Amino acid sequence: MATLPAVKQLTDRINRIEVSATMAVVAEAAKLKAAGADLVEFGAGEPHFATPQHIKDAAITAIQENCTRYTAVPGIPELRSALVKRHAADFGSDYKPEESIASTGGKLALFNAIQVLVDHGDEVIVPVPYWVSFKDIIEYASGKCVFVPTSEEGGFRLTPEMIERKITPRTRAMIINSPNNPSGAVLTPEDFTAILKMAHKRGIYVIADECYVYLNYTGKPFSAGSITDVREHLLIAGSLSKTYAMTGWRLGFALGPAPIINAMSKLQSQSTSSTAHMIQKAGVAALNGSQQCVADMKTEYIRLRDQTLDALSKIPGITCVKPEGAFYVYPNVSAYFGKAGINSAAEVSKRLLHEAHVVTVPGEAFGTNEHIRLSYATSSGEIVRGLERMRAWFAKL
Image (cartoon, rainbow, N blue to C red; front, side, top):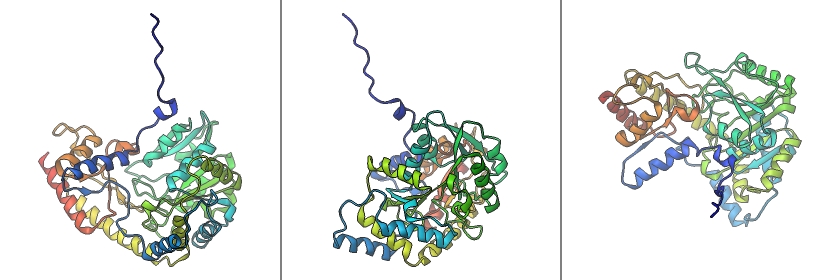
């Protein structure tokens, strides 16, 4: 009797990627929490602040006014106008509303950008450490990641020379994330400008992930969009999530050349369609309203960063580069490798979770193997609790 061929269940493209490491950590922590564990959560990158009241009020009003139907895929006109006006006011860019699109979170903007720009075999330059989803989004599009390692000794700073050494005839794009998740490193405006001009000259697209652009602690925030003569090869992906404490609202955006924005809109029309109408209305209130809430949150993050660094410095063997932006620290824990059966950052994170009930994310998720990431977007009290648990746990090894 002939044997039937095995049935292929899943596509190659879905098998090329993995579940988001940060989401996996969140899921594992949720299981422990449901079982009654008292966790200190440094895992997910999520502001601990409540969404500002005027933004919540705008969404409530929108619902009451029956803004509950479909909108145009790239967003309502007043949101697209607010996006480009806010960016122009803060960074000196000059995008038009038709060069913008609203998306269901900044991650979707990045996903759509890669899908419309990267084809089979195209190379995409990705500095290391990188945000967890960059690698998988590129591989899902059948692109090839070309990694650019940065060093802890150099403060994880990226330079134009590092990028230039990795450019080949197959280079299609590069992703620049500044301030960086997970390291908190910030590109200088001079180096960022040099990278933008180098890419533009070679016809290479720069995808600037500006999720943390307002959380830059080195001085005035800098956006790639302020360099207006490279716009033909620049796409900005942004989010209201971190800037306005709106993670669960899922509102991101992209700014770029109209043909690319139109292609992203076409793709989005066949997937999520528009972002929810009342969420877009809340976004308008966030962008057009007072920005004092953004400044206040930034001030608090700097205080929490310094508190976290001080506590980490009291754990023997752990070193940590001072982050210049975002809200993460990325300490090196390799001094403890070889102790108590520990040989990787992944093992450190796993055992911190199960033995000390402290949630962190292992560096392997970000392309390095000696670090763990902690988010200090939490209360001072939780930082005290969590770092004391960590100090005690490491002391026992």
